[in-house]
Length: 362
Image (cartoon, rainbow, N blue to C red; front, side, top):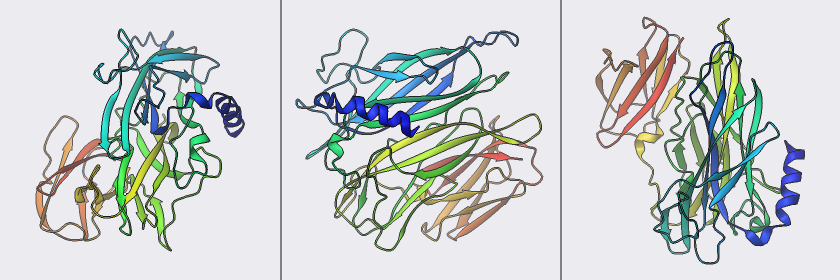
């Protein structure tokens, strides 16, 4: 991949004048019908590229985006979101994107590009997209305005597999943190196929990148999908990157790697109150293990006060007998050893908001 990145960077430096000032993004995939037959499968996938950019008269706007499918082919994906109210130069069915943040000197536009591609057969495919440039002033990427923005996902197509959809995220990868206070965020990922998910904190694809400073603390991404940064040290814009991997059992009951998505996220560290994507205490819950065989453990590290409601459902929506209101504590345990293997939905409510998590029972 590094050799591939060098080729991409070399090309993009030559067209830096067309900069879009990218802030964050990810690539998602989903197999779509028709699926063909068992003997003659059709591997058609919907590829969705989501990029978050600056907006304004001095910033280039991308009406379409080039997607490399990982099989030697590429395609031009139109932007499909936002209507035409922003007054971009796009026309017809190509839309103008959607402004999601409008603050002084901090404007963010969400751009969604979508395209269909049919693969010739099973295999491993590295889907990627790149563009000049990242936005200027990113603290942990030196000379960021001259650095291309690169994102990728790995699609695994297994013979005979009926479907494979990438993990999706429950929030945009644009957030704000408060100087000197721990920043905690759950990625709120779900997988439509019920695949088990694992999480890695990885370097951003950028020369000279370094992890955010902590002042002796740490940055981490646990296996519930919760990113913690204790504590932000500098008022600045930072980048972090997460790799979310899919795992699926084969016919022998062994989990196998089934694909991955890399999310490139921006965090703006400010002094005082966080105004954007303000952290909900309910997001600080951790749930493990997953997959679970006997006991499901839920922790909040003493952050939530008052009463918490925990509910467990099967995929048919049947409300199982786990509906109890607990007083604030650091840990709850739900026995699951008597439940059939399969996929369940856990809901946690603190009276103000609800967090839903998919649980795999072995």
